Image (tube, rainbow, N blue to C red; front, side):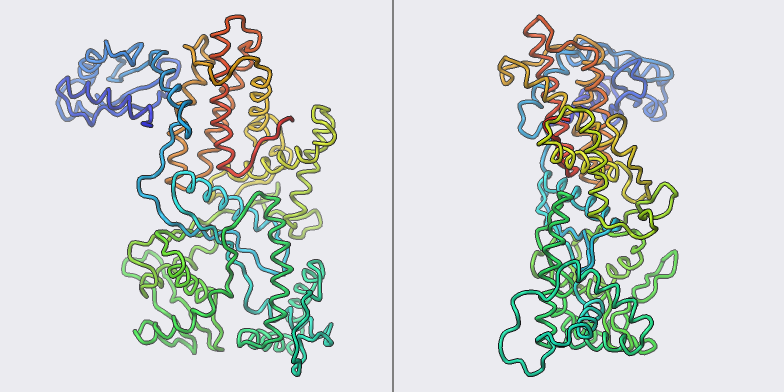
Amino acid sequence: MEKLIDRLSALVAQAFESAGYDQSFGRVSVSNRPDLCQYQCNGALAAAKQYHKAPQSIAQDVAARLADDPAFEAVQTAAPGFLNLTLRDSYLMDYLSAMRENPRLGLPTTENPRTIVLDYGGPNVAKPLHVGHLRSAIIGESVKRICRYFGDRVVGDVHLGDWGLQMGLIIAELHERRPDLPFFYSSLTGEYPAEAPFTISELEEIYPAASAKAKEDPAFAAKAHDATFQLQSGHSGYRALWEKIMQVSLADLKRNYEKLNVSFDVWFGESDAQPFIEPMLAGFRERGLTRQSDGAEVMDVAEEGDAKEVPPCILVKSDGATLYATTDLATLVERERDFRPDKVFYIVDKRQSLHFEQVFRAARKAGIVRPETELQFLGFGTMNGKDGKPFKTREGGVMRLELLIAEVTDYVLQKIAESGIVDAADQRATAEKIALAALKYGDLSNLATKDYIFDLDRFSAFEGNTGPYLLYTIVRIKSILAKYEGDLSAAQLQPPNSASERNLALCLTRLQDNLLPAYTGSAPHLICAYCYELAGCANAFYHETRILAEQDSAKQAGYLALIDLTRAALELCIDLLGFEAPDKM
C-alpha cells in the first residue's frame, strides 16, 4: 500500500508539471505549522531559482491546478512561496479504511529480502547475566523482529563466550576443590557421569574465585592456562566437564533470556568456530596475508586515507594463543558455510568499534565474505545510574540481570496491588508484562548509540513517555471495544467530528512513515517516538469523546473502528519492540 505522503507528492508533482515546471519540485511533507495546514510543499522556493520566477507566482500556478482535486479540502499559498495543503476528510478516511482492511495495516514487505545473521547477546557461560548484557539483548531482539516483519530471513545467534581461559580457570579450580571427580582420572575407561557435579549457583561462585586466585597465585594461573590448552587439544575428561558446564549454563541463560522475551535461533559459541581456525590461518599464510610482529602473527588492515591509525589485526599471540579477532573471523567462515548471509550484523558495546573495524577489514582482505556481503556493527551506549556512571547495585557491584528484572517487577506489582483493578491471581503476570515494557521501552526509546540514565520511577510511570503509558492506552482501548455490543467487523470509519479525531486519523496514516525508516535504519527508537505520538492522540480523542455514550450508531461505530485501528497499530509496534500488553492494568 502506497504511503499517503507519496500519494500526495504524486498529485502535487503532476500539478507542477501541468503548470510547466519539473515534477521533482512537488515533494510534500507533513506541515510544521499544523495550526495552518496538514501538509506543505516548499518546491516553489527551489523552482524559483531554476525558472527565474517569483516563488509566490509559481506556488499560485500550482495551486490553481490543485483547486479542484478531490484529495484536498483547501490549497493555499503563503509567502514567500509555500503551498499549504489540507485533505478532505473523506479522502483521509478512505485511506484509513484501506489500511484497516489490509492485514499488514498497509505496510509493505521488502522487494529484496536478505538473509541476515544477527549477532547479539554475547553472554559468557558459567557467569550470570548482568545489566551489561541488557542492551544487546533488548536492541538485538527488536532489530530481529523488525527485519523479519519486513521480509528478511534473520538468524539470531547468541554467540556464547564458551571457550578460552575462563574454561581453564573453572577446570583448574574444580580440580583443586574436587580432585576425586572422574573427569580428572587419566585411567578412566568407562563413561563420565551424566549429571553435572555442580549447580549453576556453585558454578557462578567458582569462576570469580578462580579468576581472583589466578591474579595472586602464578602457579594456579599456569595451571589454568595448561587446563585451557588441554581442553582445546581434546583432553577427554576436560571436554566432558566442559559439556557439563555448558549444560548447566545454557539452561540458566535460556531461562533468563525468556524473562526478557528474547530468543535466539542458534546457540553457537566461540567453541563452534575452533575447527575453522587452523585451516583459515593456513590459508592466510599461503597467500602471504600475515606477517610476524614481535613473535605474534598479524594481518595489516590499515588503508590509504585512514583518518586515524588502525593497528594490525593480531591473529596469534607470541605464546601461540588465538584471540577474539581470530575467533570472529573463523565464525564468519562458519556463517558463510552455514547461512551464506547477505548481511552479518553485530550489536555490541560501542567500545568494541575498533575491534570490529579490524575484523571487517581482515575479512574483506582475506575474502572470507563475498564482496557484496554487508558487515555492520551497531555499537550501543551504556546504561547508567542517576549519578551518570555505569549502573551498579546499592553496594557498588554489577547487578545481575535477574535481580534487576525482579526489582522492576516488584516495584510495578506494588502499584498494581494498590490500584485494586487487577485480580489478585493475575497481578504477578500483569506486573511482569508492565515491568518488561518499562525496561525495554526505557532502553529502546533512546538512540542506541547514546548512553542513557536508568530511572526506575520514570520508566515505570503510567504517564509520560514510558512503556507502561503505551500499555495503559492499549488496555483502555481494549476495555472500550469489549463493551461494544455491536459487530465491530462491520463498523465503518466516518468523517471526523472533532479536531482530536482528525489528529488521531492523521497520525495513523504516518505508520509507514515511521516504521519503514526504523527498518532501513535499524532504529527502534523511531518506533518508540511514533508510539508515544499515537498514544497521545488516542488519549486526547478518548478524553474529548463520549464513545460508548454516543447515540448515533453510525457515528459510534466510526469511533470504535478508529480506536480499533489504533489498537492494532500500537500492538504491532510494541510487538516489534519486544513486549505485549496485559488485559487489565
